[in-house]
Length: 269
Image 1 (spheres, rainbow, N blue to C red):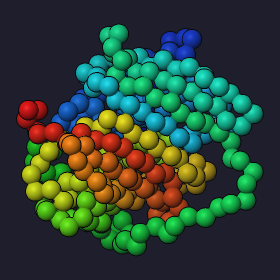
Image 2 (cartoon, helix red, strand yellow):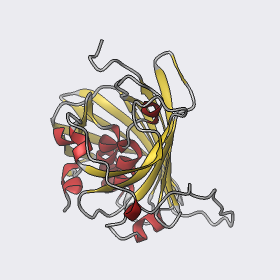
Image 3 (tube, one colour):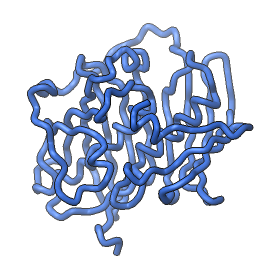
Image 4 (spheres, rainbow, N blue to C red):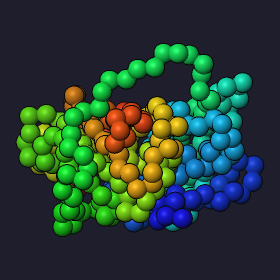
């Protein structure tokens, strides 16, 4: 198992409940990364569903409170299971307090011929983009994966657009399953940082991920990176959205995401 597999692993407790752990090595300045928690929830849902023919197609998570480092519990319920699509809900708890609530859709491919996609942004291949080293004092999560900045301005540089992205990979070769894609969907720095000049915290309120091509993701070699592209077009009242895309090196859209973030001072005031 990779470090990511171990950190997001779940253990069955029976009747749709699973034990897991919130690992501080994957924390942001304000607690566990939202994509990391989404990966744990997805592991529990996949284990309860136990049907490889129905891969994850969509998940929406709302983050109520950040769990502390230590044990958590995920309770999964099948809300409906049809001939092709199964809908499940999940609740991540710690010491009786609800931390994350989620609902996901898992389905076989539908027999419809429509298939098209906009092209991947034109960027140099990962091998031609230098590795972005973590800044001193970067949160623990930044030390868990590789970043190669290829799109947009540097964080807190006052750029013209809230646009950022580049190549991402975990430190160990990792199968690109739904939990790994969920992590990458929230691992990159918020794109609004490219437009700001003063550092802020940006904890996630809600996160939705659509998994667009599970077969293509599963066929990628574990050592291949993904290209993440993230944009914020609107910020007001201390809230901002982030729209993201995850692409394979060959130009296949693997997932796209949308989240709503709070914008808060780093000191928590």
